[in-house]
Length: 94
Image 1 (cartoon, rainbow, N blue to C red):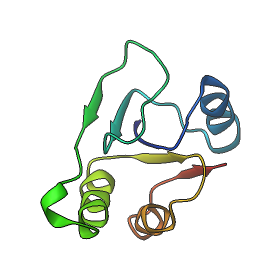
Image 2 (spheres, rainbow, N blue to C red):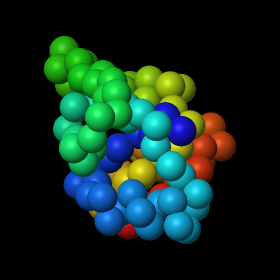
Image 3 (cartoon, one colour):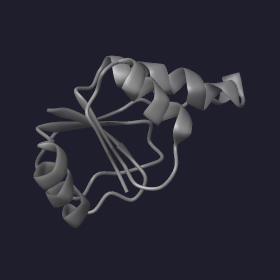
């Protein structure tokens, strides 16, 4: 699964995402603020456009959910989680 990574995602978090939700990453998508654990998997980074100010992160969230199969989030990111729910993505949140 192509997974969005948000927050400090560790190998232990990935193990729980697999065990609880069946989310097994095959590649990662991020906005550049979070990095997946070290691996050989492809990571596509879509940076937030600073010209958009506060709207930049919100706009980028749409890009991420449209390019992913699942979301793994550590901490709070209510907008991203809400979009993932709206798009029907499986979500693992800690």
